[in-house]
Image (cartoon, rainbow, N blue to C red; front, top):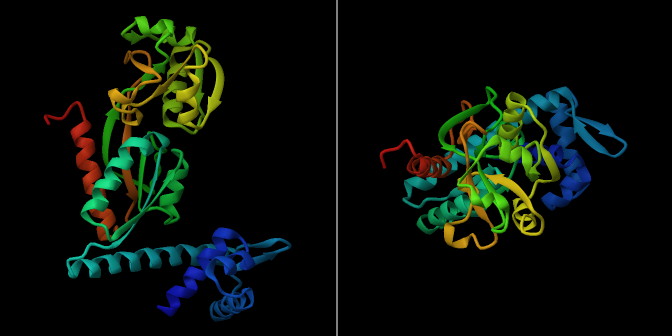
Length: 304
């Protein structure tokens, strides 16, 4: 366990880029922390950090070590979770990164339900774009990623998905509310407030633009759905969201939605995924199973 503590120290230094800042986070003196690092470097025979004028960064050897350290810490968390399960008490910590569309409704419901059943399990839930979510899994910063149209890499192992048809959102006064389904021409004719390019909805919109041509009249970009949702009632704009990111019908007091034809913008998928080849802790694995069942219930192709 002492060996793991040293690895945790190294991981903290690598994340903050400073021995002094890491020491403050770990509640030890910077001198004591530096001694631990020097002792480990002497044991390995190579420096694991490059000393810079303002902080430190991992050396090539340090990059190898930090990958090993994060695997070791993740495995220990899994073992501790399994041991806790032997006593019949579900404990553990689940770290999740997800797209902004999943945060406000879907994740709130599922985390609350799981904690009602297993109050000993804690969570960290962070918003992440479609590319950074994969990095979070690879760096052991997250157990699970729930993302709309994630960037596909060998490190990402999808374990569940559901199709999502992009919808237009607009104020009740917008002229396009007269239509039940929007076409590509409707989209090109409207003023748009769009999510940033790191967003999965924007990714599909850009793909449609590349295939169909035209010019989008983008007046505002934002990475905040709260801003977008509130702004469309201030100006005659439309934006886009997936159904899983929308409130229940009774909560749509400030905007309304309209379907978009499949020939205008293709459907995408929300994926639940983990790092390829990683064995998840018990709590995270069971939570993932619940998410997958929920996505299956949302799938229009399902018989449920």
